[in-house]
Image (cartoon, rainbow, N blue to C red; front, top):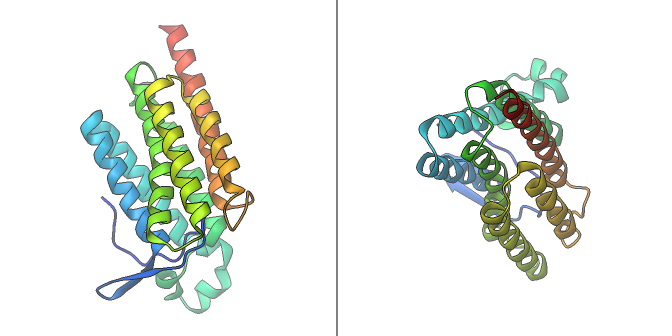
Length: 223
């Protein structure tokens, strides 16, 4: 589903402190966490819903990685022209992460005709969006060595929020608003504070969720 490529550090919420070697590759813990997250969420969607949902998710995840990786063409075009091999070792950084999230979100939005927005289908969207964020945060905490306070706060708050939202809340919008609010509060306890990439990405996904829910309401009205 996901190609094995050079992934530089993804700066989301906590500071990356550890690196892992996989044969010839040396990857930061944040990149390992991202790849594992994509696989786990793909598997959950495959088992909990249907094949078309897991396929749509894997397509979006792959798109995110490609855009993020090759966004270096946007952020540092001169370097790429001078040294094309730099595409193998570097990425577009924070700008690339946002571009990847936006393009992947647009891809999901375009596929909304094939993936209905009513009933348990809405739940699939909620699970995909929230689990991707939560599992990534959990893994980053477990794979890195940060302050005990920030680690406990992240694990506890996001675990409670995720369980409550996925099992008790039906609408995408309300669940994502609650999740983004909780994520922002927890960010205060992180080394990078509230002005970090994860909070911004959560806002992007919140916008996606709101748009999808509105589309679902329109479809319901037509029905």
